[in-house]
Length: 125
Image 1 (cartoon, rainbow, N blue to C red):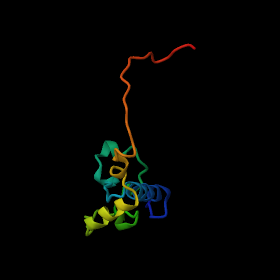
Image 2: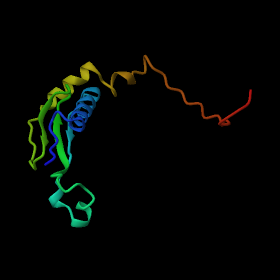
Image 3: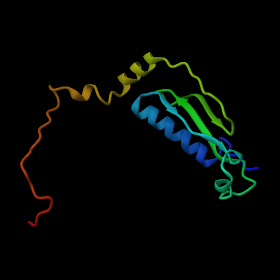
Image 4: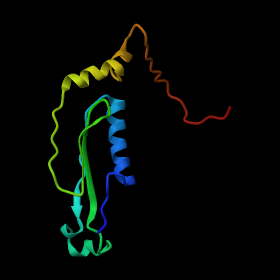
């Protein structure tokens, strides 16, 4: 029976990606991944996988806070509903650390100008 553990590379990659997205965006990330057993597939599709394989996709669903900390999950190799209490004040507070849409829009500091003059894509000089 093949089973993916939390220490396997795909599971580590999923968890790292969700944590990175949450931390960089200062947002909550709800990562949903299907947990599917070979036995749940139609026979013609199941025939494409090794017969001793139990899980086609082991899952890996998780909920990650804006800090990048996993607050629920990851859930691997079982079907389960994931719950977490989400503190919206934590998301607002995280924006003080890095506000990707707020303080960069200050007209006293930044000026955006668009030159709509038609130009050739390539030119020889």
